[in-house]
Image (cartoon, rainbow, N blue to C red; front, side, top):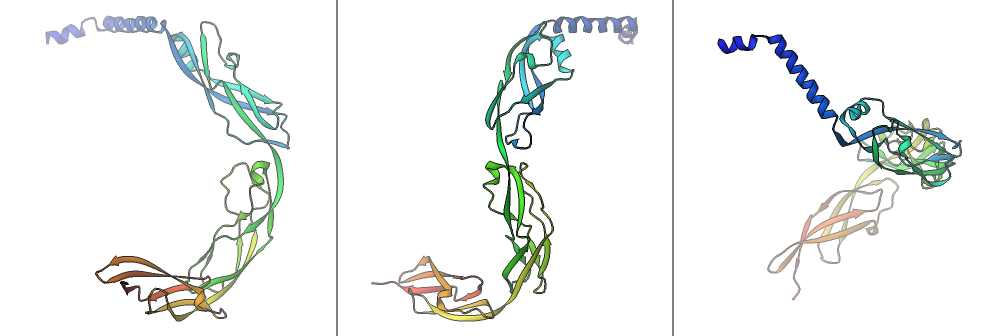
Amino acid sequence: MKSLSFIKENLGLKIISLILGIIVWFNATTDEISVYTIPFKLSYTFQGLGDSLVIINKLPDYINASIKTSGKTYLRIKFSEKVVYKNLSNLRYGINEIKFDYEDLPISLKDIEIFNINPRTILVQVDRVQKRKVPVKVVSVLLKNSTLFVRSINVNPETTTIIGPASIVNKIQFLPLEPIEVMKSVDTLFVAKVEKLNNDFIRIENGEGFKVRLSIDTLYKDSIFLRSKKFEQRIKIAYLRPSDYQVSHRSFNIKTTLIDSLESLLVYKLEVEATPPLKILSVEPEMVTVKKSN
């Protein structure tokens, strides 16, 4: 109880002494000169680009400045607005080098020594804007019924216009439409839009309202017997085909893979590929054996 009463004795005076001690310590500590790194946010202003030029590389959002100053000054800068406003004027087609100087930093140079800015220079790549018509295509039709196949695809309108940097626009051969799902053979008319491009520099004048007409046919089950050059055993292939499709032995390609070698026999696994629109259902047998040659 005596120790507790000692703590309570002159408690207000002790708290004031503690606060004054902290203030003295903080003041002495922040008077020390040290090296600090401070990030500055970049804000760009563009002049002179017009509608014919466009910047095609990502510009940095921040630069870092290494300064030598007191702790007090560092704290004042740290909690103030730190934005570097950079006017990018008179940019030319090609690669432009932009430099940052100490004077660009929104801080007073009094009691501050700036000895590094990172990055000190940035590269701004400028390209010409180009407008070009490109085809629009259906690249994916999802058939929910395996007995269906697509005979033909018609898109209207067949083209649309893209606008963007010439170096990117010239590489685009066509624009893909979003995948189309077909549930049954009577589903033939769709309205689709262009898939989202993974490129923020390209603008599409019209990316919606494309009328897609599909010609859908039904596949019929059929079978054929074939022989491989490696063995005499007949192979039965069950497949699906369009009603008017002419099938021959050349429509199929038999592949053999050696999976085991016994004392006197070789065991092969069979795989059959078919020319589209044929679809393989089954292959019998799936494995064959061949006698080893002497």
